[in-house]
Length: 508
Image 1 (cartoon, rainbow, N blue to C red):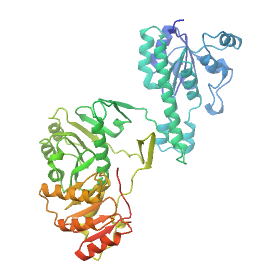
Image 2 (image 1 turned 90 degrees about the horizontal axis):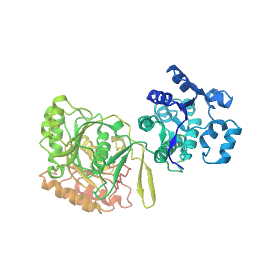
Image 3 (image 1 turned 180 degrees about the horizontal axis):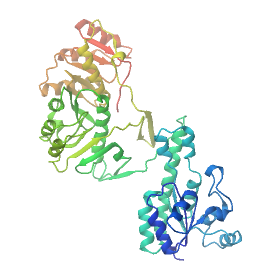
């Protein structure tokens, strides 16, 4: 038996009518009988094309305010019947059920309704029942039926039926079946995540995918699942890579800590800030950030919290960098930055980031709340005899924000709202501190009067002793060690100020 099917009938029940007209006209041209419902029926008749209302098949009107329209054996029997099964054929004849060869559905916009902030009752009414049932039925019976489950599929479907005069292949039908189950599972996951308050099951689904050239390394496949266009407007450059996206994610999360503050510039490499500064103007912020580690900055990701102007762009253009991100660009600045063909230039949109975080681990997924706590002045508890000054508090909070977004174990050294150096991803806090001091010395930073931030407590006084000998005069850390007093005692004996926040900021 041929696996190619000639379509003679189609059921159309859609929320969005955009893009539907060419399909309807093609059906009319091919002599395909159209069955339809409610608003879709009116849309088709307004085109001057004949169609059959579903209620004329079922002998039931749309009831319960439209909640029940297609849920009837005379609809689902025509979709689910096996064309090569004699028993099914007999029952279709007995109950006068028409076969449905094509099913086109576009679901109620549940996610958009949730995102709009609509009241709960409006959201509940956008949970599609009939549509999702039609999709599942048609997708199940792909041997005989092709299911078009979203308006995003209209163009591809129209091309198929136009190319072969209404015929569809088993390969096309199975492919569209897979698309249909992707649509239905994504829809159900969105409803579950809206309704769920127990957090006892993990359900995540993304209906947009960006293929990547490869993963972290060329031998690994890679893709991004999510809506990059909702996050960024891309103005220039090559496609983002897997590693670019990891750095961009780190950059966006870090710069969001400084939203609305004075001009701030960050340079990131391998997910960590290698340069960071805040100044009265963006050019100075960039220049001083670059001075933090011009070696690591090569090939890095740059991000600013203010519009990039010409003066800043001219400085950036001297550096080979992969990605530049900002909320906006002056026109002349943009022209300068476009001078490098492959440089990716992105506008960061004002988008709320997820409040949950998850990653694969072993044979499952680790889930946690996002780290939404940012240390503030009111969180600080002065634990030493020497009280930190207002200027030191400014630097301490600045350092703490950077520390929060740096790989553990980490130590961050800051002076005058400039990242002097960071120790990142070390197996001990002493190693992290010594790495930071060595980097600061290498790039000629005078640490006299600098401050130090740690992502976790000091179990021994060794770190504050090393920091003190390097010139550090104030420390911010979460506290919580049973030996906190040892570090406090050293600070008191050596005139160092220390504040504790009570909040650890591990980042693995």
